Amino acid sequence: MSWIREGELTILERFCANIIKAGPMPKHVAFIMDGNRRYAQKCHVERQQGHSQGFDKLAQTLRWCLNLGIREVTVYAFSIENFKRSKEEVDGLMDLARQKFSRLLEEQCFLNVCFAYTSRHEISNAVREMAWGVEQGLLEPSDVSESLLDKCLYTNNSPDPDLLIRTSGEVRLSDFLLWQTSHSCLVFQSVLWPEYSFWNLCEAILRFQMNYNALQKARDSYMEERRRQQMERDQAYVTKKLQQEGFASHGDSWRRRTLLQKCTAMREERIQGFLQALEHKRADFFERLCTVSA
Ligand code: IPE
Ligand code: IPE
Ligand code: MG
Image (tube, rainbow, N blue to C red):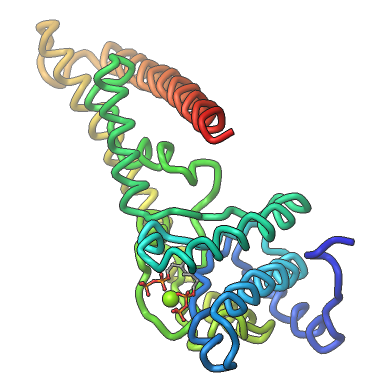
């Protein structure tokens, strides 16, 4: 029996889900699932029990997301900083992760798990990958851009989250998806993660809907600015080329247009080549890692 699909929504939940679904819905939701230890303390149970209930809450939350038509969920399950916790707690979390995630990931494909993750580590890694591309002659320094950095992140296959939810009342991101959430709706809720309810999720979605227009506007104007900057860089490159060829800086308009098309096509080709090389490099790395740990 499926862990996520077992158990239906109540009639009241289904009714409210349908009302919410009439408004704009987030396609991708990210969760910082925080508050397991405070929950354990509050309920006078072992810390490991708090973490275990936290994992079970994730399965339940995924079911609600599925019912609400949310297509993708990303969760912060364990940060690199969390390795600093006691060995007993880290070992316990690793055991739970092995058991519960293998079950969750087996049965559905809309969950991304950030484990042993921090965003600054991810971003600096992406910058190192681009530097490697330049060093290998696969990229020109002028190819380095925000959109290329997007493609070097671990999240390159996903759209940015529309909504990020952190539970437990803490109002910080704790180094989670810093790059990807610059135009997301951030919702901080005081409920402890193992106590998260369908109604908490509805409240967060309503807050997203209330801010939808402003979020959309910010996202659109950012994308427009990004396109404008790329066009400016390409124009500057063409002007330099024309000057080298002895044309006046505005050049002959036919020559300028041809050079601009060529320059864009060559950049795209370089970037494709680099991304393919990067994929091979990462696949090699994981293969070596699996061989070492086998
Ligand atoms: C989140 O809950 C789970 C992990 C970080 C693994 P915490 O363990 O941080 O619990 P609190 O925030 O201390 O209550
Ligand atoms: C963030 O929670 C990481 C996860 C939820 C996995 P923490 O509880 O570890 O974060 P800080 O230490 O309070 O910022
Ligand atoms: Mg915490």
